Figure 1: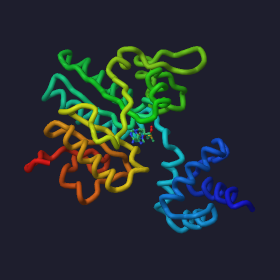
Figure 2 (figure 1 turned 90 degrees about the vertical axis):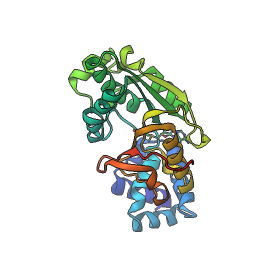
Figure 3 (figure 1 turned 180 degrees about the horizontal axis):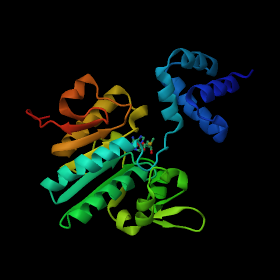
Amino acid sequence: MDAFISLQKSIEKLIRIKCSNYKEDYIKRRILSRMRLTDNADFEAYHKYLLTNPQEHELLKNALTINVTRFFRDPEVFEVIRREMLPELVRRKNSIRIWCAGCATGEEPYSLAILAYEQMLLHKDVSVTIYATDIDTTALQKAMAGTYDSKALENVDEKRLRKHFISRDDGTFEVRPHIKNLVKFREHDLMSGVPVAWYLDAVTCRNVTIYFNQKQKNDLTHLFHSALAADGYYVIGKTEYLAREVEHLFTPYNTMQKILRKVASTTPD
Ligand SMILES: C[S@@+](CC[C@H](N)C(=O)[O-])C[C@H]1O[C@@H](n2cnc3c(N)ncnc32)[C@H](O)[C@@H]1O
C-alpha cells in the first residue's frame, strides 16, 4: 500500500480525524510540517514515529486542526471564567480589558464577550473590551462577519442562542451587535514581541503555540506577563503548560482549567 494512504489509515484510527474530509494537499502540508519538526524524512518514517510515540498524537491532531475552534471550547474553563474570574474583575474595576490571542474565526472572543455581557447587565457601570487577534487574515474576516453554522454553536444553550444570535433562513446564526461591539479584531503576529495593549486584566492564548519552539513560547509568556496588569489572569490551553524557565512569572489559579495569575515582578525585566 502507498505509504501516505497507510499513514492516513493510522491517523483515522489513532486520532479519529477523517482525512478524506480534507483536501489531500492540506493534509499533506500539515503532516510535512510535523515531519520536519520531528526529523522524519518520509511518510513511512513518520508513520513509524507516530505509532511508537503516543505524545505525537495530540501534536498531529492540533496541526491538522490549526484553525479549528468552537464556542465555549472546553466548557469547564468558561465556567470558571463566568463564575469566578469575571465577577472578581468586576468587583475591582469598571473598565475591563481582555486579550484573546490567536482567536482564529472568533468563537473564543465571542464566548468571552457573551459572559462579559452577562456581567455588564448586573453591573451597569462596567465596560469590557476584548482585543481579539490572529495572524490569519482569512480567519479574521470570518470572525468579523460573525456568522456560524450550528456545529460551532453546539456548546451554546438555547437561551444564549436566542439572546445573542440572529437566526438566518440558511440555518446559520449571526452574532448580534451588542456582543460584536465588545470585540475589537486586529491582525497581529504573536512572534512580533509587541503586545496588542498594556495593563490588560486577562489574556487567553489557547491552542495557538503548537508551531512555536520552546524559546518562542517562553518569549511569549514574558510578553503576556509584561502586558498584564498586577494580578492579571492568563488562560492557556487544556493540554498546555509553562516551561520551568518561565513558571515563576505566574502562579496557578485553577490548575485543572489552566488558569494562572500574574506574579508581580520584583526585579525589572
Ligand atoms: C487552533 S486555533 C485556536 C483558536 C482558539 N484560541 C481556541 O482555542 O479555540 C490556533 C490559531 O492560532 C493562530 N496563530 C498561529 N500562529 C500565530 C502567530 N504567530 N500569531 C498569531 N496567531 C497565530 C492561527 O492562525 C489559528 O487561528
